[in-house]
Image (tube, rainbow, N blue to C red; front, side, top):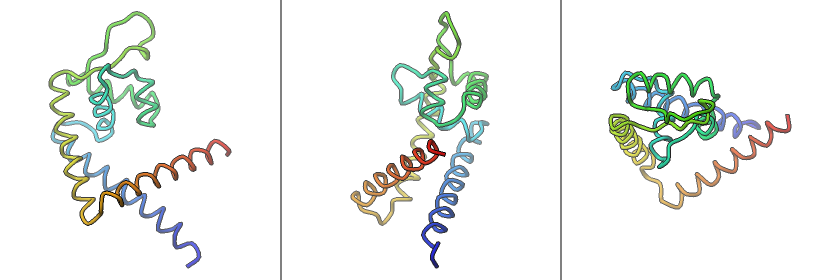
Length: 148
């Protein structure tokens, strides 16, 4: 009984992550894409000026190699293009094509609908409080990892 909170936290967090990944993967399968590209696609869509590989890696909290694989997949399907600038390719910004924007909009609409279902029975204050607590926990975990 002593570790109930820790057990519940770790198994609950794992369950939520795996479940959301399954939902994203199912949606991405409609476009013959892997679930890992969802976050990159949506982050670029939410950025008016596009995003570099480094920015995507930081904002999505994935390594540059994974960003590179996601972008290669999205570029091959002509959902994303990269600004053609001189210099290192990691400094060039990725932007969505019209087809990429349509897909990102569809994915974000699905995720928004999913959130509304998940929030069923919760007040706005409870949802806000949850995100504030989650942000603090994430910051504390990041700090713990830096120390170790």
